[in-house]
Length: 149
Image (tube, rainbow, N blue to C red):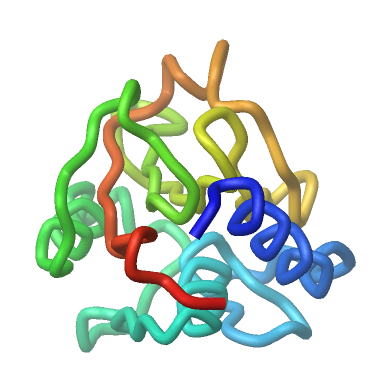
């Protein structure tokens, strides 16, 4: 598969998220948080991610269990990738404040990612600048060479 075709497919699939509001613990197109978005989007490519770790996700979960999200990411059947290896469909994760990983998104190409923001709802941002400084890693869940659209 050509990367341009994959990027076009990703952008087409992202259209349905454009007017979706940010909702804590949201898991449908009526409202999503960043984890809900990642879960729903990967499902479109046949990848099922766990919705939670068996416990309720409180709004301030990061205060009582700051390693919760990264623990879950590390359990995924995925390959860790560097900033310089990023490609479409890689899952990226970030520390927004206090160096605690609390945010995630999906790469559209090697420079842009899609995510849900509490302030902006669904958005597409470049991963350079402020987002690169906040970035704490990425994993590859999809072998795009074997992907068929």
